[in-house]
Image (cartoon, rainbow, N blue to C red; front, top):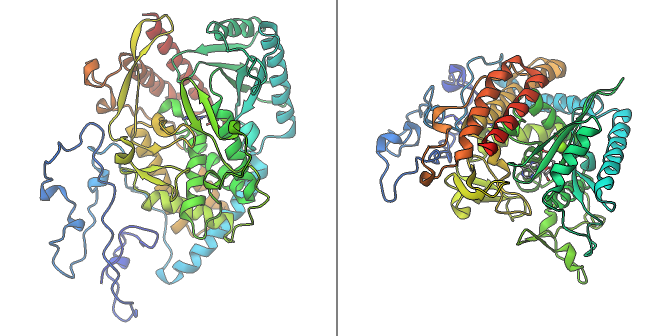
Amino acid sequence: MQQPTQGPDAPSSSPRYQQPRRGWGNPAPLAPPPPSLDHFPPLGKENPEGKQRSPHSVPSYQRADQPHGQQPHRPKAGPLASNNNPIAPRRFDRRPPRLPVAHYEQFFVEQAANLEKVAKSLLEEISPPDEETVAKNELLHLLQGICRKLVPTAVLIPFGSLVTGFSTASSDIDCVFVAGPLNDPATPEVSDDLPALLERSLQEEDFDAQLLTRTRVPIIKMKQRAAPGIGEIQCDIGFKNFLAIHNTQLLLCYSKCDVRVKQIVLFVKWWAKNRHINSPYRGTLSSYGYVLMILHYLINIVQPPVLPNLQLQPIPQGTADSEIHYKEGGSEYNIWFAKDITNIGPSPNTSSAGELLRGFFDYYSYKFAWGQSVISIRTQGGLLTKQDKDWCMAKSRPANTSDGAETWEVKDRYLFALEDPFETVHNVGRTCNGPGVRRIRDELRRAMDLIKFRGDGGQRLERFLCEEAPPERPFVKKEDREPKDPNASMSPGAENENAAEEAANSGAAAGGKAAEDLVLDTLDAVKELSLNS
Ligand code: ATP
Ligand code: MG
């Protein structure tokens, strides 16, 4: 009798499951576990072409020469958990108490109901209070006024969670500076010196503002101090990131397609923030990345699908070209997606948000092939392979600093591959380093284990699932640092980034939001240092 060792039906490593006693009326033997898809070699360690794997490198439970009937052995700290694989999840030592196997199915249903309860109550708890939304809109107005002193026709277009409705009390304001109406061909280009001028204007208005020039697009990060009843408000002003406006609209449309989308997104964002895996500056994933993961699950994985693929809907005749093609920085993007969702009927999937959440954690804990797959929500099926996209090795590109000197741009990582729906050469998961991906996977498995086995009702489930993780430990490993030689796929600036990450990691021991701020400050300071040197 073989038991699955992976997947949703995997019971546990408890001997009770592995060696069922006689007389339990066990069904026919289950198929052996599918070969793990996770053996994608870690970055920089790909097998040279043609080189055969040693048979010993194949985990024992995958070998074809297993004696028939022998229970495949799942190693305690198997190859997935080996230190050589930067994205392999760790196994948890402390497991929550389990229910007797007879209650297993019923328990799943109960836990989905609990999860549903938690997700619904969270909606109220973490949605920003009305005063905060008003304050954010007022701040946006005020900032636009400051921008107009520099460029009289300037507009600040909001994007991100303020527009999609996925914002939580701590969400920042994301906006992009445009020198005039977006679709007006007469709108002038933003001059190169404008970001620095705006930074100075904001500082003169007593805002805490800082221009980051080594980011993918120039960004001013600024804060408005806390006021009575309203916490500090953070705002990012971008300059050349118009695609963000389009992807925000896409997310908004998906959210309008089904009410469960917002419930699931808010729950996952809350969980990711509390578990400290929502810090792109610290090697994990942005909120945007988590939303794409959820959309992939709801469009392509759950059956029947909860969401249609809006990017694959036929283009109605007479659609303006500006709705289909968009040019920016010498590249053209296909930005088509169906915005009129009135013709798209309700989903045949009637699962509760709780059941869908359980499925989401299950999929990313045990089924998604992190080592091989690329999430691509624009694609039929939603998955590509890293080989398809040539996203197998980290890359660095030559670039220029703001003063024109030649340098290397921070490398792209593909440990977690999450294709942007419009800018398909961009990996939204590039912010994830090895330890970051490992932590995300650990947390997903921790969540799934809690959902599976915690038999103590909704309240405690909520507490254990989303309780704030302990302060982050330093996690920049030696092998994750870039090599010193630029020819060996390196980026000189990246060394400073690592220094920043390290400084940030030690600073983070302070824990909480303050640590996060320190992380950003340190990272930015070192980035700027590297610019000046
Ligand atoms: P939060 O409430 O946490 O701020 P959010 O919904 O605003 O969440 P963000 O991660 O702040 O999500 O992203 C806002 C926008 O920034 C996204 O709509 C996207 O356009 C852009 N963005 C964020 N992260 C990335 C990324 N890694 N790559 C490309 N674009 C990104
Ligand atoms: Mg945001």
